[in-house]
Length: 129
Figure 1 (tube, rainbow, N blue to C red):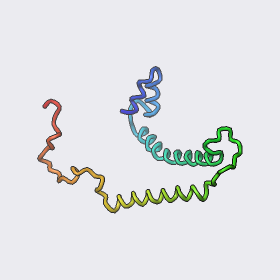
Figure 2: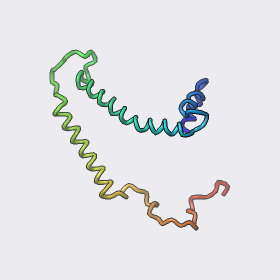
Figure 3: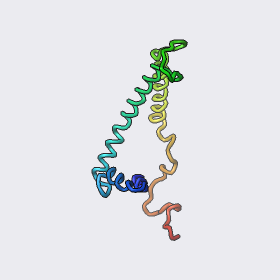
Figure 4: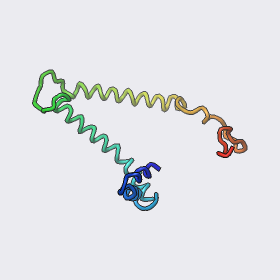
């Protein structure tokens, strides 16, 4: 459905959709491509973020000319790297606490209702009613 939105592009839209799908319909090739994309994309984003941090801390964020200005500079390591690592550890600890300590905290209460094959929930009905 989402890939069909690309077909709205004039002249080349349908060609782009067929190229993404790997044919005229969604098939095994499409699933393989999207699985590969979803697997490799976090690594690409992490690499780009690391490169961005490297360049940002080499030249500074408010130094558009890139001139060496060592006035009031604080080195990235150990000051900022320790702070970032501590924040990462705190977030992982909070996620672990929620996941293992109270896994149903953010769940939907309707998930705890026992399933009954003979009764259809009242909010599910055909469109013609």
